[in-house]
Length: 596
Image 1 (cartoon, rainbow, N blue to C red):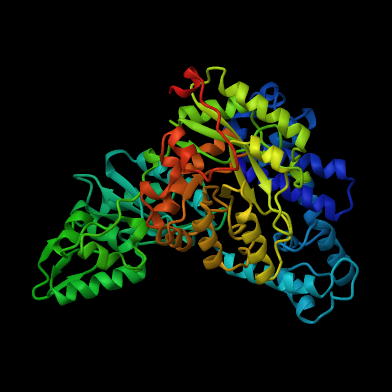
Image 2 (tube, rainbow, N blue to C red):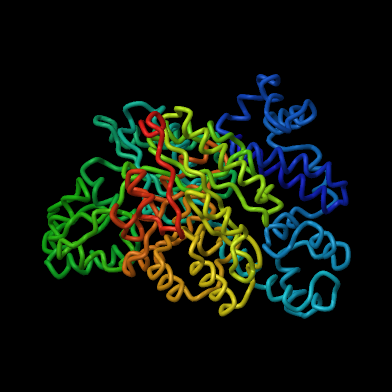
């Protein structure tokens, strides 16, 4: 079992205990363990073999080691199973609804026996909640929005979940030896979509391994992957199955000669492929998953690589992230495709959290992990005081924290560490710190963590007020969305971007897999309006810093180039590119900390 599966079981146990009326200390211990395990780089499956090491982790005592050992050994947890005999399993779906916490879910179960999303939706539609304490008419509307989000997200998976599955299956297929020469993900995962409906893998057959008997043997090997829940199909050159988490996987076995055509076809998007096929037909050609060929006689003219197919269609190669039929065909024909940003262009990470608020690692540990990734600088941006649930720092603690960050940066870490803060945008658009504290910060990231359901005009005014504040420099996770869980904030993006352009405020492209915020369409709007962009991870542990690659992928989907993203600049140039605060000067790096 991977860490996320283990964390999910612990989190579900905590929620079920809260529904059951357990004391807060009991269910919080499971929640804290789940939070820790979610961001842990080490495998819990391996650590349970060394209980003494497991007990060294914060919040993991002897009893929790026993629980984790049981989960790893059995794939489940007896207390969770016991509670699911008392409450229907579908109640776990209800807990995913944004507007409902465990206490309200428990209330709905006790009073209405509502145990499914459909049950809750019907109660809200019938107006049966508006007069109840703790609910109201606005709550009903929010519940109906949340049920729509749930229905739309069912059957979709975050990009990191799909990527992890692809890597695990690839490693398994490679154990077949020379029978499988290469394994390549296609579909929406290759295009870098935020969520994935199913996983497409293309396997090229090795030389001398193309007979039907050999192909069948390879297919049989693939279907021995230990994570398979159900086999759906086993044909001549394709196997399909679902994994234990419900993700469907389609694996196609093909010869090298047609790899390029198959990769192009199965990468998509459908709309991009339709445009390509129309272009091919206009040129007297036909394009399918096997080849680009002549219409007459179907003689192949290109099929081994995507590059040669695009060349035969008199186009520049279109990177997978752009294949959404949003202007890339015309740009490729006119040789005007952007030179997309690459992971190696990123020189710093501008949002992360340490143990000072709700992070799992110290300043020094975050700095060392970032240095190993090749970053030249980072900003530690712990939460401000309004986010009490995340141990937000009041002004006195933040003043001391700023000094601590600067001292760490000057201590010879081999990377520059900037003193930042993730400062809450309050309901009226004011920032959560005084100007005195804001002036001391090297980087001010402004984010919304409350009052998500203001109406469009109120939310727009709130955002504009924050952007106009002379200390605001970056807007963090700008739409506040949580993929598959929470819709984006409702505000006038055009007005907000106009204000960002006017005042020099940057928009964040948040790399965390359940956010990926801003989305591609808004990033492209930033580019077209001259709004600065930063790519950050919002990491809460050192292991999360590698998520920067997902932010780069989103930026590529938004047609962004290196020049559009200010943390592709070296440290001093980056600080100069940030909005200048009133009378502020930034701290020069110490000689050692400026070196890589």
